[in-house]
Length: 162
Image 1 (cartoon, rainbow, N blue to C red):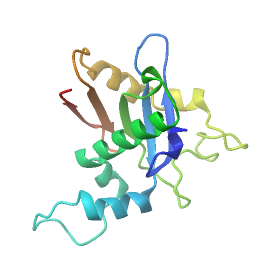
Image 2 (tube, one colour):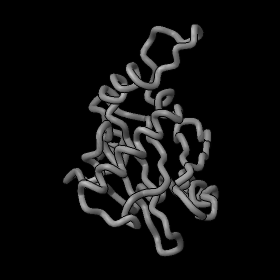
Image 3 (spheres, helix red, strand yellow):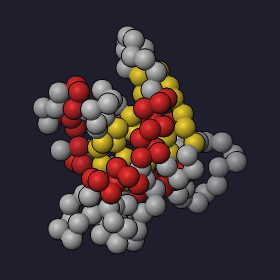
Image 4 (cartoon, rainbow, N blue to C red):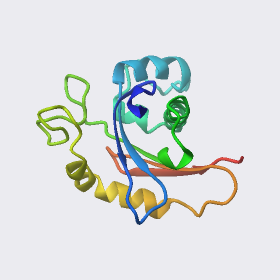
C-alpha cells in the first residue's frame, strides 16, 4: 500500500513492541524524483551545477523529505491505514542498482520470490532504526518528524506545528 506512494520505488517499514512509532526505509524512484526535484526543490543558487544530482544529494534535501512524508501520509489515508500504521520517521536507501532497486536478491534484501526479507533488513538498518528512535522527541502537540539520509548518516530533525 505505501509502496504505491508517489516516487517510492520500494519501502521497508519496521516496527517493534519497544517503540510506539513505525520507521520506514525508502528506496526512491530516481527518475520520478529527478523530474520532481528539477521543478520543485532544486536550489536556484549560482553555485548549483547543471548536472543531475545523485539520489543521495536529492534525498539529503529537506524539501524532498517533506515531499516523501506527504506522499506516505496521502497513500496511507487513501489505503485506509490507521495513524499508528503510518511510519513517523523516514530514512532513504540511495545505493540503487541498474534496475532502480535498493532491496534485491543479490544484496539479501529480497527473497527469490521478490518479497522483502524483513529480518535481514531489520539487521542491516538496525543502527539507522535505533538512531531514528533515539532522536524522536517526546510527542506533544502537532506532528514531529525525524529523518536520516542513509548514504552519509547526516541526520536532521524538524518539528511542525499543528
